Amino acid sequence: MKMVDLYKSPGTYVSVSPVHSTKAYIQDWLFDSEIPNPLSLDDLHVTLLYSRVTVPVNLSTNELKARPKKFEIFTSDGLNALVIVLDSPEIAQRHQQFRRLGATHDYPYFTPHLTVSYDVGNFDTSVLELPNFQMVFCGEHTSALDD
Image (cartoon, rainbow, N blue to C red; front, side):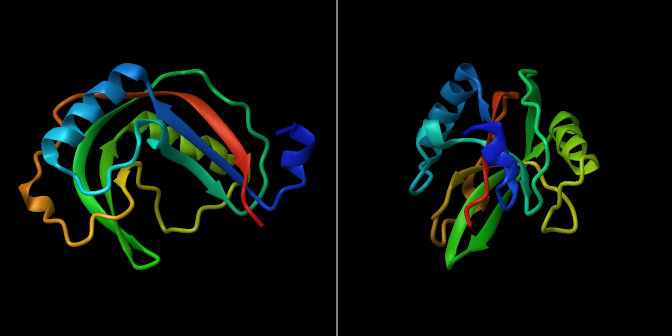
């Protein structure tokens, strides 16, 4: 997308993807955990920004590190999404950098997380073991929000 097109958009989205080694660890964990309807490895990401206001974005190539903190179920459109809430001051700081540029956020607070399935049904998360590895993310991507 051209920068001029991004400025005409109704908002800004920024995400960051796990690096290859982190994807490999996640793939093994997903398989061992038997997560229903897991996302493909190429679809795994952390949303850094979902702003209804367009802001200028300089994409970073810095690595962002995170540790799995806990599981949560986010319900949207009648589906239960399984997310791993992340402990990552670096990801939280990157989100705040965008907020200082005037970006908006629809929730009272920002929760860094990695969605691993958009539809786990009534899956019992109490049977899951939290991944025991550091996650590394790099390679930011931005796009305009859909109209």
